[in-house]
Length: 196
Image 1 (tube, one colour):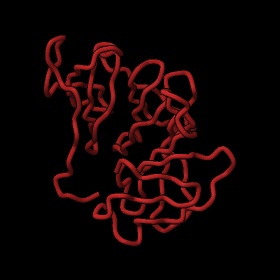
Image 2 (cartoon, rainbow, N blue to C red; image 1 turned 90 degrees about the vertical axis):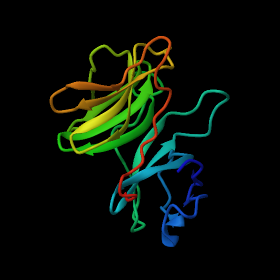
Image 3 (cartoon, rainbow, N blue to C red; image 1 turned 135 degrees about the horizontal axis):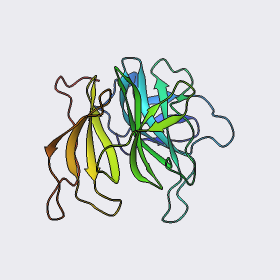
């Protein structure tokens, strides 16, 4: 839900039909010093938590601050970070989304190596998954066993292929191929049952 803002104390939702009344304005508690300045709700994480991305601070000119994913309990308890903090340089600078698969939790984002998909390790670190033949990859959505990904041959390419990536086997199955002349610009998933 783009446009939601973390104001230092309240998370507000400008799209009133998206959440129950009790969740439209939530007190999520004061964060520690250096806490995120801007927040956008991404989607439901599970039946009791929302996934949100928070910027480390307001944009500084044309460059945005690193973003990190957090889990917001609908009970009103304090938000908890999902995965490690991003860095201003390196492969993980901006979080875009995360999914729980049977084989583990996967995070997608952007950084110095373009788009990436990484599996969260037990230690809280990220291990990037290398997808064959791609220079940049970002996940769009997931099932219990597979990620739907946009694959680009390099960071500068804006035309991608759309493919299923089986996280446990590493197998990729193209749904829509991408070429230098045609491909997928973006993909937006819609849940079949309309639920979280």
